[in-house]
Image (cartoon, rainbow, N blue to C red; front, side):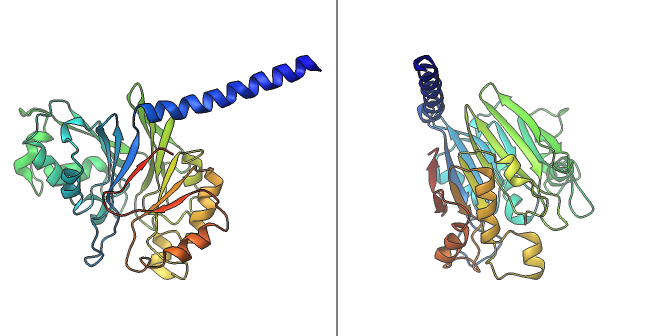
Length: 307
């Protein structure tokens, strides 16, 4: 019996040490989330549109979405474009992608030398694929064709964009390694008729997951976000929403169910629109019926370290 007790407590100690070591690895490398845009597509919400940065060791490593106004907050955050390991898009609504050409034009004035991967969903009847989006914006017949040297590898440029389409295979997680300690994972989500994906950024033994815009009809987000350290969820509609809005976005009660099923260690609420601003207490109360972890409401330039 004493031997069994010894083995039990030894295993328990190893589990606690492993968990503490994982968290200390993240803390030691200063892994954190910064919100560049906490709003949606409205003109009166006093917020930049959806965009996020992952910081590692004081460097901005991954840009998630590039909504209108985010490039100014990128500057305010003191991030450097040459440090980015990837740009990823959840989908190509204007409030998630409008500043993309601004980032690329601005990069001309930076010392960036390394090619930059750009990830986003495959296209469908309503939306272009990621490669098509980049080409239509920056290609030789694109809206800003004067920047085509960043896309056309036959033209001289300090770096080139490398576009990748995430398959819209239902319920399948796709994995994209970037460095030894940094990788991306994506899964399709239901955003009405739009092609859309959710993203998980894996850093060392930590992760930050982004829902993007979705209503959870596919039931895929909890799978992607399992045991994530921070789950960023978009609160675009109140519980009373109906019709098109409810077909595009998840309600607060559903957000709580997802966070609970994912066993998320904390939640950050973003994409806060006028119809949900001022209703934070109600949103939180509805979520807490199913989720008991920390819930934080994001504003532009807020920083959230791995808890």
